[in-house]
Length: 421
Image 1 (cartoon, helix red, strand yellow):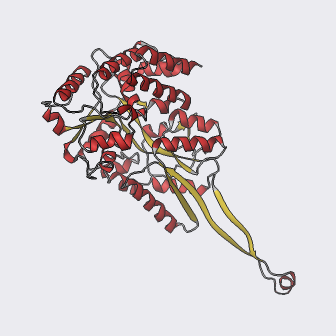
Image 2: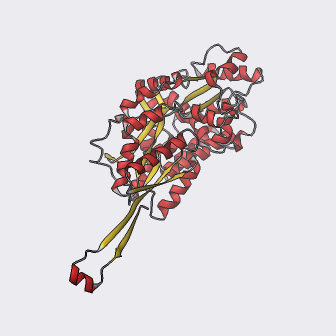
Image 3: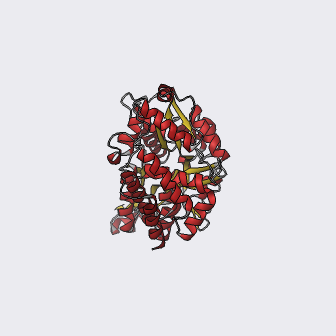
């Protein structure tokens, strides 16, 4: 999709003048254009990304960067349309995993092998998620984990002294919040992926790393860990803990704003949640110091370790026709100096540029960085770890559980059938 805008000779001496004075042809060249698609729709991140692009263009007058900003689901749809048409943006947001593998197989993404040697050091574990067949096809700028963000003031109103350590304690706290007239949980049912987090994390706590490795390798998602995850989640759903209209709710407009406005006690979300809550709150400030975080609770008798985490990151890949300048801009974007500026926003970016992590000063986010460093196994988001088609079935099926149209067994059977088809 890259556009090299070249002109031919803008001026040419006449044959008579050329023969008499030997005048040379004059060639003009327009800037190389780079199309950059990202999904940071909220400020201050959105403005900072444009500022970084403007700075790069000022340093490189021969480059023009066209920035396109799309919401999460809109970006996925637009990328699919582009790639089905045989093109790709020069730089585009990528979550790595199975979707990236499909894009690579389709010939839509450039390999970055041999082009990263002089970059500032990036976290190796995070980098592995953007590898396909042992080659690097993208780089992450943030990598973190999903956990519960909670409103400490609302917990106190319900008489809850500390976050729950086990799933049973979590359910007790949900009931205590309901009894106090407080909405326990905000969730974006329409977007589906926020609902998927619950099932995925329960399965990790119940079955551990081995359950996921077997399911992904064999396509059998109907093992005991996944059935039990569905049953445990159904127990939560039956308590009716979510905000009114949750099945029609979207993430930014509803889930993040509900938390940011202090209207719900908890949300299960990734490291970007604090920034999204602030950006979508009526005050523009969120709930401030009342916001806390705790890891997904343990399930009694489960095989999962406390250091098993579920999450992922955000990064960028390079489209098949992108010019070398696109890779150079990506290097600038992931440089220590630029990564520190994003980290210092304290909106949830946990930098993968190793030297930039100290720029995160928010105590809540520092806790997430600490948990990231302690992780012994990280399961990537299921709709990214698998193919787009299977990821869609996973999200749709779990939404069916939330809507009451599917049972735990139905969910696992549908995912297994899709995985093996």
